Image (cartoon, rainbow, N blue to C red; front, side, top):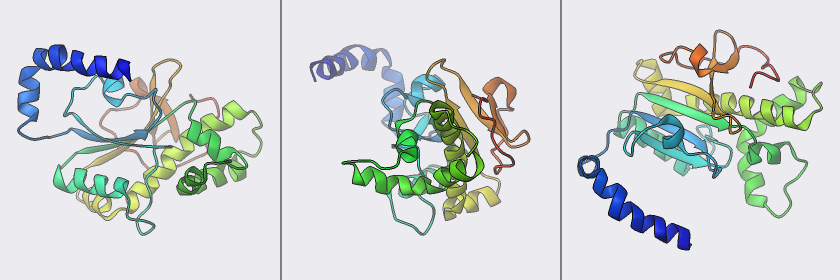
Amino acid sequence: MKKLIKGLHQFRTETFLNHKALFDRLSKGQNPDALFITCSDSRINPNLITHTDPGDLFIIRNAGNIVPPHGTVVSGEIATIEFAIVGLGVKDVIICGHTLCGAMKGLLADKLENMPSVSEWLKFAETTRRLLKDVYSDIEDEETLVNIATQENVLVQLEHLRTLPSVASALSRGEINIHGWIYKIQTGEVFAYDPDMGQFLSMSEVPTSSGTGLRTRKLESQSI
């Protein structure tokens, strides 16, 4: 806690004053460029990895970067997505998973002892678990399975995203693009899903303007 309090003082006396014009502008309203949906993992900092300022990203974080599909539950995630698209008019929606994801490790475990709420939450990633069981049954290495689960889960959550009325409507009008990313903690690289290749590719290999299509083929186990 001492570290946090020290940081608060440093922000107010140094960072805030050095960027006074930015914070004055933000006090008048927000106009974010993108909605960024990612994991709660403490090693992920959306503004840091995208080199953006406060006000540039509208951010949702939860265990496993999950988007409950339409009709299952009225959640903070669904309300926030709707507000970002309808209320703020964001043009891009990104779901960003990451390597070494504890939520994906938990999803692949037989059970989560003493964490019933986490277990219940991860039911929104049940399709991911089933895909690993049915499509990747030939893979036994745990690290590789978690890596694949991370990639498949981003695609599953993108499919959930498309079921939300606000998203489906904006997509039909060509007003938004949706993207699937993976952040590799070990190297700082970001990979984006390329629907034409059906794989996650290094960001430098994927056109920045291309939206993410549906899953088209089995993912390569070592693509990231």
